[in-house]
Image (tube, rainbow, N blue to C red; front, top):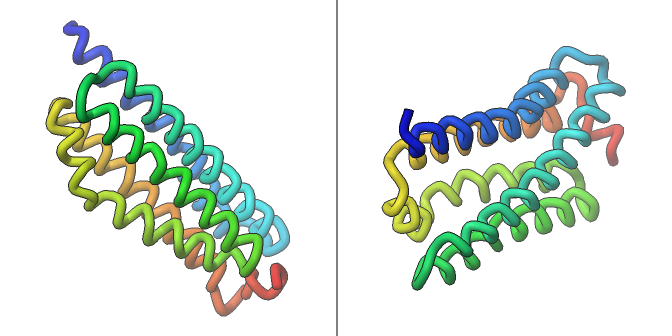
Length: 162
């Protein structure tokens, strides 16, 4: 097996391990009682914040492997997850979780279309770009599930938060 295959498999494994709790938490809010669902949805948001801060640190650590323009671009890209998590956290605390999750959902979805990301991925094989797309789509689906949970008119969990 080539070194590139081993690196890709380990990167895929790490990415799927980190996204698995998001999948479990976003699905479990629908199968629990309302009081437990609110706690699980809040845990989901806390986990997403931690995940985004770790992602930012990981992107920043990639700077040591690349030279030239890529160092500056990686520095600016590493600020995106910090901005999304911080702003979403503030919206959640100051307003309510719907605004925080909504901002995180829109920001995560729009991040996929930043042109700088695709110029960075040109130095990686196409498999890494596919992995990035898969993980970001899974993340957006999980965020949509949590967003839908918070605005659900039947159980109305946002009323308990307000």
